[in-house]
Length: 324
Image (cartoon, rainbow, N blue to C red):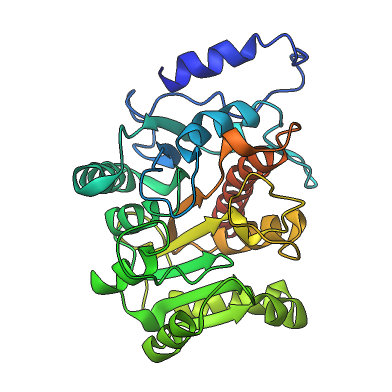
């Protein structure tokens, strides 16, 4: 199903009220259509329904479609003042899904698709799927710095949703330009924590974030991950990848994340971090991962939070354009 037909079907959802003065997010044109007049998209959404290498049983491959549907529950409006409709202020497109992004061939297809989209947009937003997609999306976007919002270090041996950070380093990413925010007690091992320290990764634990505050941690993350990067944005100048692993949140907020634990981020903390980091013009790609739409609460709270993260990324993108 194409993004346009998907959006059209949701537009007639009888459970959603219709009001011509209250537009809904998510009805974006296909990225395969002609480029906008300016020749580039501001942001492109890409589905990456990976699930086969997950360490926990998951239906994360159902999540990109679920997030697109959840977007229809929200308005693309920032209140300002003045109020701004992001769908009008930004050129946003949907590139559909990369089929079967697991395994070597799938990772190659995802990497190549991301690279093509990054060449004609300022921000590629990949909807997972599990955390394994971070490898291909970051590499495809040409990222030379990484910020993760995650309870886990993702430095495991092997090839799984628990190993993308290690695999990125083995692929050439400088660990001194990696910042991991929200790393939690009782969610990692001594061996992998020591591995992070030995590699020189900047780890900001959940407790440290709350002690220092979001603004201070974001400023450090931008400095570390963006060291030596161009600050003007545009093709190949943006070099930071933002990995949004929703299981960094409290399990009450994100019951649809197999590895979320009680006591993690509140929803507002995740949203504030996403918007603040995305406001940096060096952020050229992001992923939203580890949500299992098939295991969510009846009210869909985890998928809805993931959809709001898409909108927070767009809000950060708008903020950077307004300040440039």
